[in-house]
Length: 122
Ligand SMILES: [Zn+2]
Image (tube, rainbow, N blue to C red; front, side, top):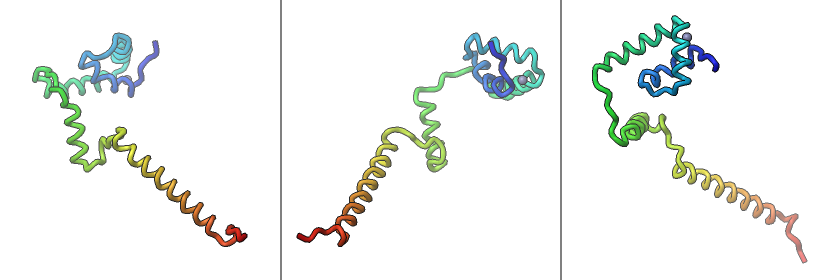
């Protein structure tokens, strides 16, 4: 079992707090917290921060909530965040670049063929 370092430990805080962590990660994080004052303080701060809103009971987000947040952030950031990389967005550009390449090739071939040197006079 490998130890977690500080960065990994703080990444696990959220899942640990949610009791969403696998038994292995839980054991590793708890061991690190026992041996590391820095992370213990950090986790205490994390708990305190969550405690401020944590008086509220845990609630399950309604279906589509995460997608709604992503959509809103995407819209408010004018597409800077959460740019969709779905097939629907990507395919037209790929198709477009293929069409452009084909067009360039066609122009090249036409120019090559239309040069006087290539014209065969019978
Ligand atoms: Zn640590």
